[in-house]
Length: 373
Image 1 (cartoon, rainbow, N blue to C red):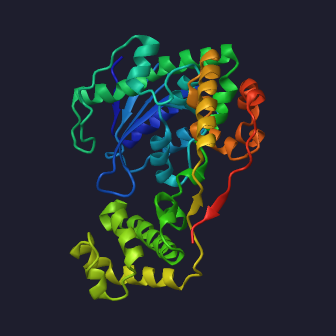
Image 2: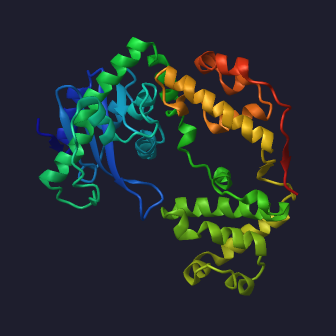
Image 3: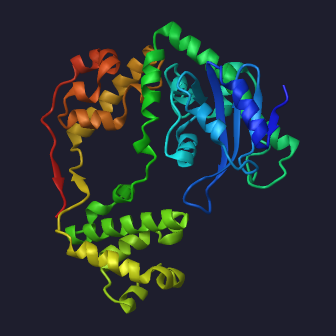
């Protein structure tokens, strides 16, 4: 089946009308974000049982029919490793398509690796080996060749068979509701909102700084996020992470002191110098409370217990035909040995499957959580 290229508004409206009665749609995107804050949507691949199409958003001014189709709640949107695609769709109108079925998540509930790639899953389920000829394509360039369109269309052409096989097996094993629950979490708009006030959470190592420096680093992270969004440029093009840390450590208060910061480019100085100094000043004037939480490292006995718990968990996961990460993670086990309530760490069906492990587990005293000075 040759993929249809949709490159004008009338064809898009006709396609979306034809797909509107589908129970599910296989969906994928091609995008670029190397030079921008937000991904630039370059191609949307979509298919049901009868149709495979590639939509060219660079040739169509209004994507409203597609957006309405993606938000039609009776239709399940099937994607593989959906997080980035959903972020791209969120940026179109600040909503996330729902409901979603992520075949990477689903595969892990059937014993595949929890990070299995699309091509590997297609081969495992259908026996088809997909070509990798267009992996470095610049999807923003036009015209797209027949080979490029075929490569892109294969991202949904075989996704159909993968979806039907996985969903049927999950239903037979009584696990479809588990997957649906995990996939529903992907449609939380807050995951894609990129609130500048929360930008500090992206930075690792803030707990190593004094409280005043932490407040400055948070203020700088907020400023950088807002600036990147306003200019639609990658964060690192505004100021790199390591430079933010240097600014927070050295606390420059003048243009001359700012110019001495290692790694701060002259162009950034000229364009953002006053704003950087203002952010530093705002952070210094904030109440000097720690921002980043510091957690005491596990002691030797706790580390050994985590190791044993993980080994037992992997045995249970294998016995149930699950990828281990679906059942529990190292972080889950660390919470457990620090004293967390097992019912909060492993709610619902996970707690039921892990019941033998939890029954064997000797409780340790709760660990301590402190804040840096």
